[in-house]
Length: 94
Image 1 (spheres, helix red, strand yellow):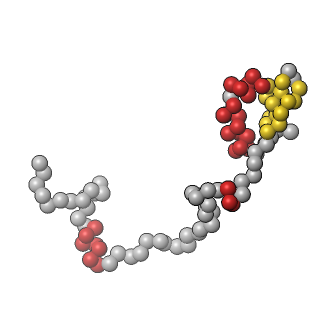
Image 2 (tube, helix red, strand yellow):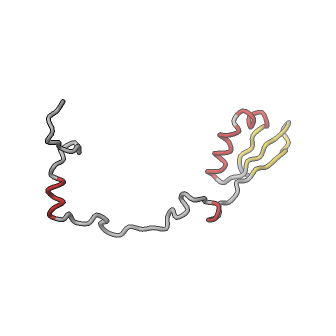
Image 3 (cartoon, helix red, strand yellow):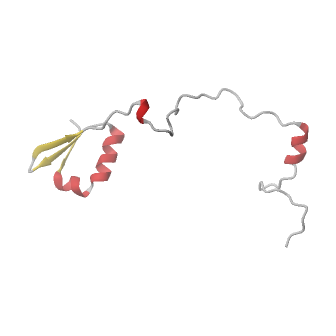
C-alpha cells in the first residue's frame, strides 16, 4: 500500500516525502478530505538513465594490491617529505 498523506502535509513536506519515496521504492498516496486522490510511484532506474557519472558503479572489482612497489630512485624522492606529508624544502623559511 505504501505511505498515505493528506494533501496539506504533502504540500508542506513535498521534497522530503518524494526523497523518502524514491529511497524506499514504496508508492505514496495523497488524500483529499480522507479519500485517495493521487498515487505516486518511483520510476525504476535503467542503466541508460544513469547519466554520464556513476554508470559503471558496481562493475569493477579490485583484487590484491593496486600500488606498485617503489623503485630505488623513488625511495630517495619520498624521503624528502616530512612526517605530516609536506615536502621538505632546502630553501630558508621567510
